[in-house]
Length: 275
Image (cartoon, helix red, strand yellow):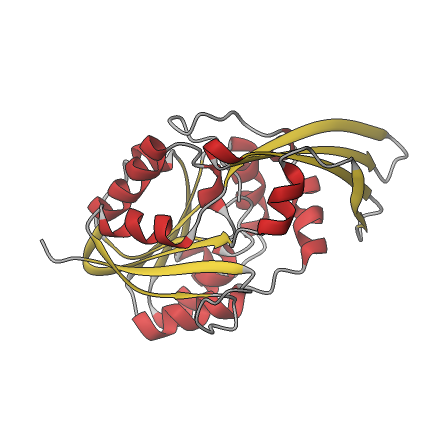
């Protein structure tokens, strides 16, 4: 995910101006969400798919490979030019059929301006956490509804609230190292984090600091604060119900089991109502 939504009351995070660092960071997380999305698309049999917050194409490109095989097109939307530049560069190594099934577009989820209707819209890997205010959230959900055909699918993947962690973060957590990873290109990345939580706003501020050693020996350091909205289950359901969707189900992980008390994720699967 990489977001700088104009009505989201946030600014671009520094990590998104370093897309190679971002890719190294995400690789270390070993997300393993691709089979979930591929299975969902196989069930839907769409013609046009939109991924919101596509970043460098981690999901978009393999989804387009499936699109080349099964006959659907994939559009990746992101506000960050550096991320999309890397996505396009990485796509150059793909087969012609995959490239033909794929396009990347720079744009804002709060002011969607895309041509045509879509059958499926995906907002994966915590993208919606960047929508900090209710106005931004409603604008995004309504924009998606306008793009979807009646009966089209909208899927939002966010982290479930960790109440124990949030309780600690109300007083502010101490800074700690939470990620160390090395890349095949000789780079290494170290990340530390400290978190505060404003309960009244449902906003967590994770203050990330990065130290990167490039293959040529150069050392880079930068901060990249991440302001994230913390969603709760009924709130997420209401966003769908208020913007022209009905919520089919919410699952709690990429294995697809129903959302429950200890689920790490909330993956809300909604369908656009008929007009």
